[in-house]
Image 1 (spheres, rainbow, N blue to C red):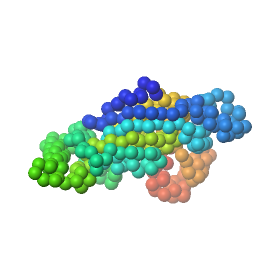
Image 2 (cartoon, rainbow, N blue to C red; image 1 turned 90 degrees about the vertical axis):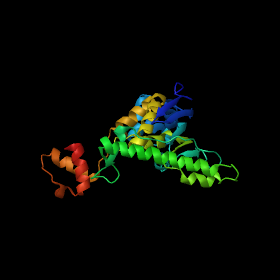
Image 3 (cartoon, helix red, strand yellow; image 1 turned 60 degrees about the vertical axis):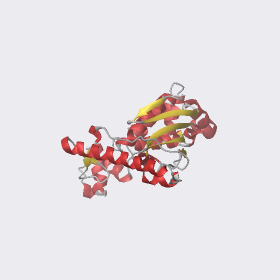
Image 4 (cartoon, rainbow, N blue to C red; image 1 turned 180 degrees about the vertical axis):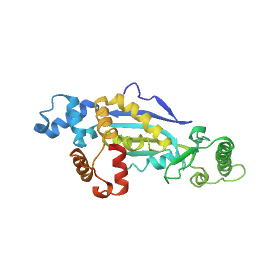
Length: 273
């Protein structure tokens, strides 16, 4: 982790993540577990085995012994999605006191996608040609025009100028903000499980991936267990387990006979065929 400390890892066109402080490591997780669980974990022979045991059985408290504080620069619309993870401490750059820079997130051409026709939250085919050029021109011109008006409202040439806390409301959601974000490892793993997932929105996923690269170096044993049991694992419902048992016994089970909804069955089939 020392190699990442104070080093800005670029994300998107103007963003970054930077580790500014951290506490604990794999050994802190193990130490906490052996104090907390005592005889319950004496059969585990090594630190890696103990960490995997804790992850496998959802023992979260030992992972909370590790904390990391990040300095993040990100577009406002990404920040509003990110802040839904309420199990962290956040202090954001204030546009009430300071003037925001003229920096906007403008997607790369390969990220300009149409609305998905099957997923209300997702993207469809990538825009091309004249349509892509039209959208990029609108994004750039609208952002710059809004910032021009922001500056004009703040101007004190011959007048008092509008208060910063009011002028900021005219800025677009793709302008960049910054914050310090402090979180423990247990809740960070939850954030990464959702936001580093391939189905997550690209603009927040790339931040999660950059953070994950730092976490992998910080707590390699815990991160390997997280990848195995959380990112790479599958949680089964009681109904899904019953279907698997019936299949292993040679029975052909249909969705109607499974007791699952159509959505549950579709997700089950995607994993188990």
